[in-house]
Length: 371
Image (tube, rainbow, N blue to C red):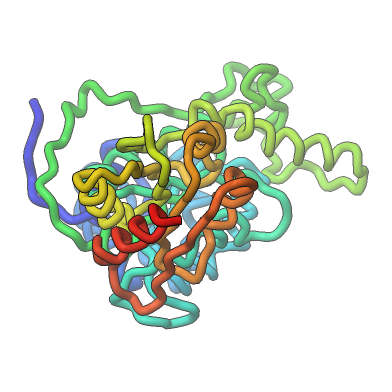
């Protein structure tokens, strides 16, 4: 039976995590993500789960890594400066193939910035924030219901592919309240990590021939398990393992990709927007369409790996691409790489902590239509 409820994005993320099987949360309170920690502290003890407030975000990431190794479904939430502190341990989770979920409710930065104002300045940090080549998956909800849906999806991806997954929201999405009709929980698909069938000759980092994902034993259950493998300076071994880590996500990209489109069948102008900026973009596109301008919207829900082929197919029909972002320009570089060779790519940027007004994007669409 479906249930309608008025909820905010942070609440929807938490309910989604609990629905996916979250049973361990470690974090440090930081605006505008704190409601996630608060609700986890209330709900996890009711189901036998564990909540712990750590001394900082470095320790929070370390704690959820340890909990996941012990067999828990583990999550943390943060914003801005806390996300920066987590990067080294995010890299550790990536190379050790430890499934964890990190929710980053973005705010204006750098440093303390404007803690109660929205931004989208962590797009590149989410992909490249930790050092070295590493696999990562980043999802970007565009409304409150998607906070629920994509948090469940984040856990499913993390468990299935043994990879850290980041849910990238922002202050507007996190604190906005909407009527949400939750689905029948019993009908949702919930993934759990594949565990080994035998303790004999267990190899925690030997990938499956098809998926390249190894089974994962729980610490303390009798398996011989050295977390990051035995140290080696042999380049061929290191290179082979890094290639496998990257290829398991590259190979899964068609399944991972998720996006929303509107009016893209005949569009000559394309707006590419994500998160809260896409709400204003959708209104602008609909207004321009009502006035006869052939404009469409492409909203990626999976930011990394980016849905390259779907965007490329749509962009081939267009002359102008408009990219609204609450940053100085980050996702636009990926758009230019994919579709910008023979297209006019326009960036609209805001750094003042204010959400885009639909008319700001509409005016850019009109300008693009004149070119």
